[in-house]
Image 1 (cartoon, rainbow, N blue to C red):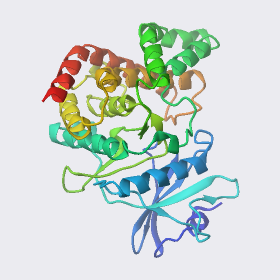
Image 2 (image 1 turned 30 degrees about the horizontal axis):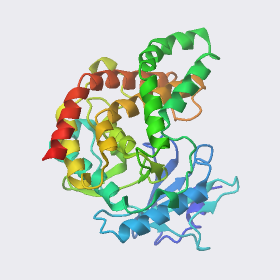
Image 3 (image 1 turned 45 degrees about the vertical axis):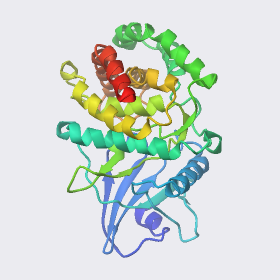
Image 4 (image 1 turned 30 degrees about the vertical axis):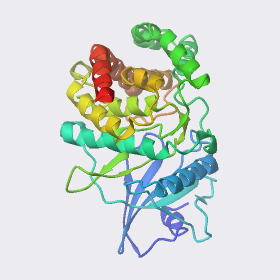
Length: 355
């Protein structure tokens, strides 16, 4: 079906002047629409990965409503209804599409990041968690089974690697051996979550810095976007993923793996912003794992890239052969650099809670 026919199904204002595919997302297909009156985002949802689309939309509506009623200070994405008053439009291949009002913004690259920007990032994630701390996670559907279950991902990697070619097995073998040393820690965290010693809270579950929209002419944050993975989880995953994607010298797809470094000063800025907003509701068990959480999530992301590489790149988009292998090796390098700073991270976080 032609894009213009899909766009015409939504209640957009004006005539289309400009249409462009945006290439940032690894999962969904996203377009920028510009009419003579305003801009919109049009998105085709990847139902191979995001299977429970109605549940995802329901979760977003529940969370947005709760945030609006709890003094949330950032802008929320406004969904555009179809002309039939639905949130989604299904094309002739039964693929779901949705449309949002575009939020004028700026994204920062890793090269642009500094203490002030990262402090605001930490503050935003902390504020997001604080506003949602009064929303029981039982109200949110679990739309992706075992998402952020690091132990399960690692088990899957070991199963996949046993079925793969010798060449591919050799390419990930050293990384597998490195990850193996954390297997007991993965299990411990799973048990803490299952026993609710780590409480299930409503979490974003994809807090990479690319999902943060900044004001075009400043460092203040306008919006936290991409809420498709809203589910009950431990906040350590949101904290860790935010650190993973912002406190380093190279993005996850960068092939210059020898130049990957962990920026401890940026970590401190993020942690200071986050704890300042969230220290009143965080449990001791959560606090104790915040320092390990960037290592945890970075290892998990490496595992997921390796799984996809061994499974013929069926999940993440790639631009060239072995890109998922390179992504995984990049994350292993970052995790190793984080590990060297784990004790310092823990000491700094403890100092923030004591101040």
